[in-house]
Length: 185
Image (cartoon, rainbow, N blue to C red; front, top):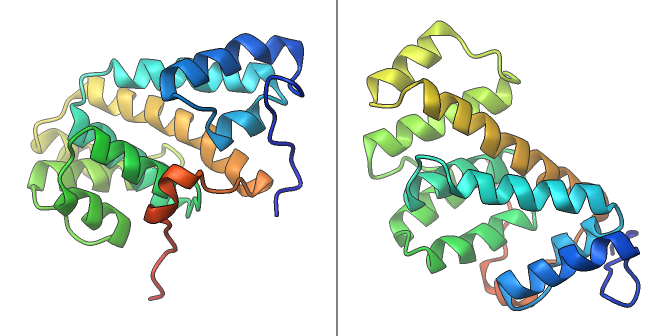
């Protein structure tokens, strides 16, 4: 049970109202994460801005999903893994990629696997990746721009994953069918 308020237009701080309207317009509803973040309008605003910017990177739908879900799974985010499963399906990402990310099994494409491996290194090493990590990422066909874009995606996901951890945000009903828990092992 969440100890944090799930705001709506009637309870949110005034500064959050245009942000809530933006979320409702973009998603057709107010996602639970946004309802929690509305308590701190600057957080919700920052999250929305980073989300939009990350979608403007050089990454395609599969690659965006790899970065998002790799971080979500590594952080064991009970809310974001189901949400990004549904988002990936809306983005026409294959079930093979979606399932591999959720189950932490190898991806069907070596370039996508290199992206996942590099993203994991960024998370686990807190940005202190090795020369070998960079060399492997570059050898897979990525460049300096994509290194920096992974950092942007990571910044976005830290905001959402950490918010969901502390708030215990309930999974939105539209994503309930994609509920997730990390496999034991």
